[in-house]
Length: 313
Image (cartoon, rainbow, N blue to C red):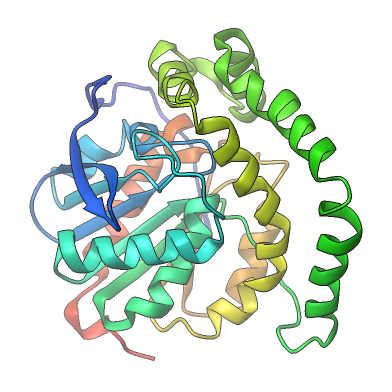
């Protein structure tokens, strides 16, 4: 395990385009993505409430050596926001089809938070079409995939908590969780609690959060996603997913993250030995808070991945 400290922020930045960059039609829905560079493909997946623009400092730098794709998950960013049940498998299937239809060759999947668990799930389906997976402060929990209580716990959650208090839960979610995402001042305050070094909390970042939140369906999408979050955490546990993974794994972790501390990275490595850990002096979003050490860690690691690693158990 090694620790990397951030250096000065003189990093090239992806130009912000209010209209977005490229669009791909998936299951009849418009999906936004950015692509830059040539070489081994890298697919970047944002976290909850994020977008391709959250990789603003990573796309240009990684694009100097690799072909970089940054994808907006369905319901977020500049992608379409249909009112559906956002089970984790929806995003998994989106990424799987994106690699097959747009990337069209074995790729490296990189995900932050929600994007991390999505990358893992997609990799278990893609198998030999994934060269490696990198997780940045990923969500997900360890559990017993053989537990007989899993189904009953999920049924209890829906029967006695989610269903009876559906209206109240929805109002609380839309009022207390989503409404602040539409206000520039509250987004700025929220980001400053997530970023331990808030120097990158600027208008660009705030716009990338508030503009998608203005979509008429955005509030309901966030509600539907959060409603499924706790169920999915238990349903697709880290150990059950890692058991089906075969490629190399890189964990680039913001060591100052209090919500998902680096102890999780250590536990992942204990469970899945084919793992490299790089600690970065940052919070939950190290790729944007400290892009230089993250870019360096990703670039160096991807360079070690060759065709011989694809699908190797």
